[in-house]
Length: 247
Image (cartoon, rainbow, N blue to C red; front, side):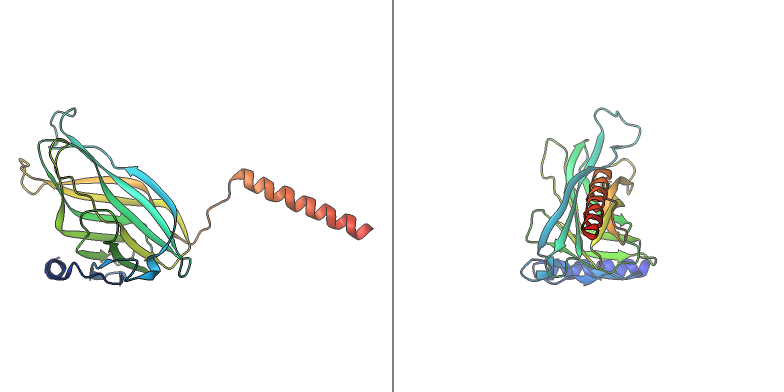
């Protein structure tokens, strides 16, 4: 843990100095830690592609602080669940984004970490898009030894004030370039935040959401109507072939 903290601190300093320089993505291998580069379509043409999914997910609602009035002290987040197919090789780029939803409390929230689960052993090149919407990207990325969990630390947290006072910062799009062309909405994402002025100093609030798009090798099953249509076409073709043989 201490070693990882030193890596994250060094990465934060690096990003603070060189954060404005667009770069290509960095390989995020199982057990590895990287400094997260900010990339653009110009600096990394592999990121150019067609959006194949773009939906909005909502996390669970938490009371801030716990045990307070649930009608006036709650917060949650939204997650943009975007998937892009690269024009370069037709493989997928997973591009979630952390969005402000509600902070009906008296405390500003500081988002300092995001975790994503469901990436198995797929190759991932990680960055965040500085040429899109958003306010801030993560400074470091870490991957669990089994490859399943990607963890991103914000050395400079997203500052999310309450509904009545700005700012409410949102993240840049993550850009997780994979080596697969199929996906499923079976992953999970967790947002970790602290509340400025919380009675319990250092208390961490965890906001979770399922249905995150993650890479897979399993082809998504066709709808039943499409299966029936294909079956009908095959039957007609078979009948026409038999008729042609007879004649």
